[in-house]
Length: 311
Ligand code: CP
Ligand code: NVA
Image 1 (cartoon, rainbow, N blue to C red):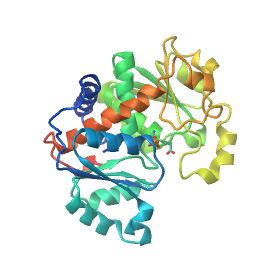
Image 2: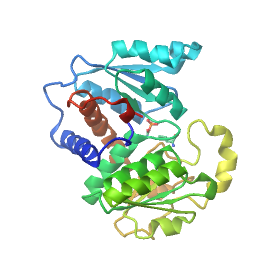
Image 3: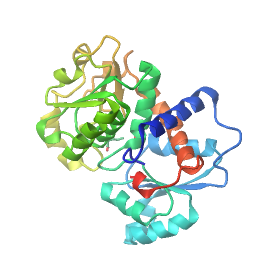
Image 4: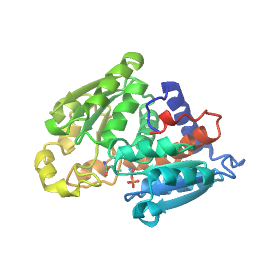
């Protein structure tokens, strides 16, 4: 799943379903009974893996967690062969990969839905839970101002997509060489014409957070970028750290968001992430409900599977 190919109404429907699960609990009918879902991980995960497994269990389905290192993929079996075979066993594949192109390959050879559980380009499942959290805490997504401060990375790209699809205003503050990619920005401007969403890019965190309803950040060094750590910290730290002082420039009732895992003292001050305005625990908890709603939408709700919707 990525937001490309999705209508705003579909995403809002998934969010409503998730909010409903949270409020009223999961259906006794076990709607995913008899369905098996493979979860393939090329890199570490706590929230994504556990929330998907628990969501699948709550809906009566079976999850098959797989680490790439224990699959024949790690010994050179082509992704095409792997996906052809898996498609005959399971009803969906959830995959966390290094290269986004690997997901595109998976979709090409899969006859079941492939859900992006994070690639180097996007993290759509995170953005679904982020939108749910904004809806809960701000009452709305349309018109809300989201300031993203830091690396224009996978989390930022999916946040941009979700905001521009649903009519939120996003302002991204990143160093020049770490701004979100041009194709994502161009797409956001295009989607914004329909939704009313807007996107602004700046190198100045203070400009981005002014009057924001939400201040969001992510790590300066993502998984797979460990070799770049020293260079990245020189560029990002301390200018792009979310501090109490930076938060004071946002609206008085602004919330702080972070996809986690976080590095206190690096991209965020401990008193911000552990303070009253932090929504990070609610955000992480919501992953369970949005993961469940997405699976049900793709597998049970009669949505005709279209591979182009999948990554
Ligand atoms: N936010 C998130 O995706 O966390 P994990 O890496 O723990 O899955
Ligand atoms: N940008 C981070 C997100 C982790 C959930 C990474 O890719 O490592």
